[in-house]
Length: 263
Length: 301
Figure 1: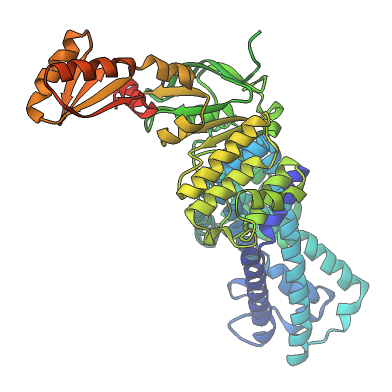
Figure 2: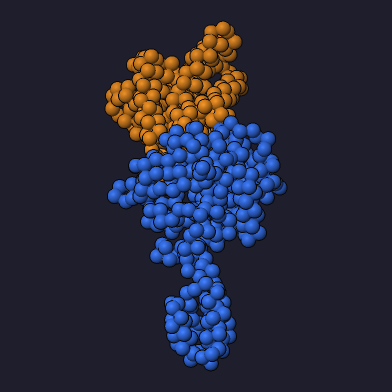
């Protein structure tokens, strides 16, 4: 498994993937942070679905990591794409047969890949946190928002909690991408179905059907990223979303183990 | 005592739906030999190779690779190098990086990669991305990847595809060197002249069934040699055929020649008999049966 992990890192480090992922992370983090701070006085709202997040809220110790935790959904989409592409490309390039000749244990292949992609997700989330916090300080100065509480121990705790929650959510989205990659064996199919499911299907239904978001893994992962909401507790969101994901992963892992590699 | 076997399969079958991709195959490949694996498209060659490498599960039967059962590929694959259905690598990685990925997964030393790239003629292109490679270069990288584990058995599916004549000659020489050093080379190819030149053993498939398995020389010896006689005068064709038939040989007129079944010993007798009958021969050529002719005869292609 360790050998697969090391080999997978070589593939993940390639500039075409790592640089484009960092650019995507910079873009989504900058977008969310800019909207949150620069539209703080806008009557249209500066948060998700038109929600208004006031200067007072941004001045709290949690204000330093608010933009970063709001980025989780889009970071999740990036992770979904990376995990799905890295998994499904083995089928489209025909490289899976090479991997299996060199490592016949299919579970070791799967776990090694997953481990390496989790490390990639950690790097992604860390980079997003750095960009989000740096931009928060920059925009706070521009919009005259107090950052006094951002250097308190409470702020450090909030940053740490946000980091863990966003990481759990991002890896969850990534696992969803990996499931789709193994199921559809094509990066384009896996990514398009994953994005449509998360952004359109789950998003639309949750907006119109009350409480249905309690049963959607993508919506629950967003809840995990923000540390829970009034309606859905953190524990419920965490255990239900990961229950769905690990169940799905177990099914596709079984298929991966049993399926003939004939392409 | 019989020589140890690199490969043996018994009653090996694979069924997809109603179609038997491979049907009750039995064959053996001795250690240290170069074995050609031939058959028309769709005859089950790649299916067999995939079963030997643990990529697909047999419907019935079994076999052994380097003495280990094919249901436990982890026991023999570290000693096997393979290229199946052409080379397959990551386009955005360089040739070196692609080999590095496979070496890491297999737990092999990565310091042999440069030497392998040199060996297959990619020493100066190892740093180029795979997507920039020509077909021949991709093929060479596939062979280098197969050699990574310093294999006891090399399984190659159409390894000379896309190579120029010089490249084919290099690879042929490489196979012979590997076999001489004790590596068994199991190679499928549609280039029968190549297979005939390099292989000591042969496994021939048709419609998912093994129709020959054994020494190449034994197969070719089974085929009747032919003497091709060309009379100076085309009107003597029938008369020449009758002379050969009267001597107890099968004769067939093909274009402006008579093909007479028989060893080269009969050439002198045929020449004398033709001269005595007033026929002047423009040419008289004994022809050994080639693998290609044998293949077409046996497979009915």
